[in-house]
Image (tube, rainbow, N blue to C red):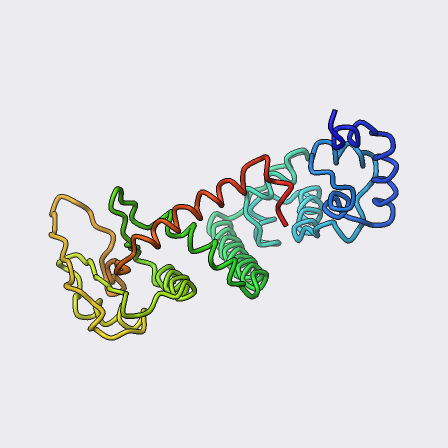
Length: 288
């Protein structure tokens, strides 16, 4: 039996330590790191019966809405009336009050009922839109600064997901229609020391698109002049297909190629398998 197994075998001793740490106000993650317990099932058993500290509890913004919805339901309001009052979706209201008795049906003028229901839907839409914006902003701020190592790992994963895979003669070609993906990929290449003279760009666009505007758009995105761009590829129109990539915002796809990129491809491939190995189950405890 290994030393680690012997340590896990002393369950009572570990539980006393875990409970003491829990009562001091530590989170599960902090207890895990303190006791070096990386088995989640065992960790939860060690603190079973001990409530989490208040600071770890995530507030639920909908708790007040749910309580108010139940009050209104008990007062005899319908789903539509509660929706108008609170601006919540009917599906949420249904989950919150489904165990309560149904109110007696009352006659309400159809026009008034429809108008109020529409107002409720508009209020719910505005609320969801505001919640989405707040969640997105909080997530953006949570990322913070990106270290060189984080950008390196991100770029490897990005290329392995979207870049070209070629054997036995590997080369680097990354194509995407999202300008932000292109910007991140170029930042990653520059982190690796790839100079601008090794970069070539190729626009691929449907023949019905605005070719000139697309070429100018992608030149601005990459921040390099047209000497770095090759001939634009035009995709033929098939009248039998229902294309969605149309309109003034359609700029086609940009391919980024790195000259003399065989060695870089091998580095990407090796780094990717290194990431896979580090993320596998036996290596979980080595994460920082």
